[in-house]
Length: 417
Ligand code: UDP
Image (tube, rainbow, N blue to C red):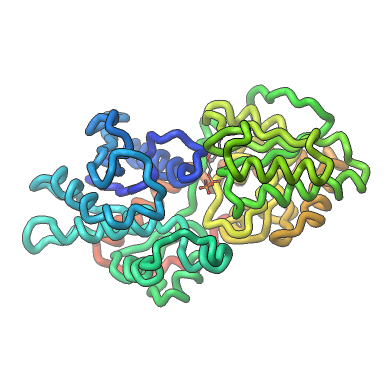
């Protein structure tokens, strides 16, 4: 198949861990590579955000990234990119020339707009089938972030419209299917294909980084409030009360590093100081991908405690490294982390519950080992990118065949280990 991916803000080539760079960059990169390995020809279109970027980067023989001129050639926050989607579609159609792809796959709602626009402009009488992955939904964001949601107002009607117009939608977790349904989108055209994890990079085999205290809790991700890193800091005094004071919390991620310039980093450091746990907290800043497995393996537990989470690749990476996950029971985490099997679920926004779950793990090496081993097995069985690519390919075939076949509300295969 000839496949076009559109990922307007999340270049697969971008550095990870900045405010707007995270799971979507990893997802688009890994999925494209896995599809190319299956013999497909993949082009990823992303917005040029620097004048120095070459027009085209060939990543592998069957995979290229095209930087499209759409808006200023500088970083623009993703929520301000809507006006440039027409130009992005123009660039995509121009690059297609007279040879449109078999399918165009939009990532994030704005890319969906560009994908639908480009798809309509194929050769006369031919509309390229459009598959859409939202990665995050505006309704959910608005519910949790309220007035802090910086999405453009148009998202409230454009996003559902993308959902209605796309030939097929790929939801990354079962929770998303219900959200789509409540947006008025026919779930018969929804497939579930989760995010995957790079099992060649992330595994329990290999060295672990050193730590400075008896125990280490790890938090990884973009430093934005909704990731709930502050909740893990707030759990430290409860852990102390429970007798676990020789515990360090390593926080990895954040565009501006740990120099205090990043407002969220500042807020977290101030909070740690106010709670009297500053000496237990380290903000490491952004870490390159290759360094992540050793960091995961150095932890007793990985805390993923967001307010909400469309999917969450970090828990998969932790599981693949054989480390138990303390997971807020929200969104994609309820699919990926199996309570008392690969980690422990906690209610959202509950530092005391986080401390309780971490204490249970710290006090029992046997429990840590069991959950870690189960997690690694589950990651390998369910979340390889080759498997996710095969499921995505099926969704493409359904879109191409114009079939609105329901596969969405079957129980997740991963419900068992
Ligand atoms: N990540 C990284 N270095 C960092 C911070 C994060 O490589 O300093 C990676 C992390 O390992 C994961 C991704 O960024 O692969 C974050 O994905 P996730 O889906 O968990 O969160 P998102 O950013 O999409 O909300």
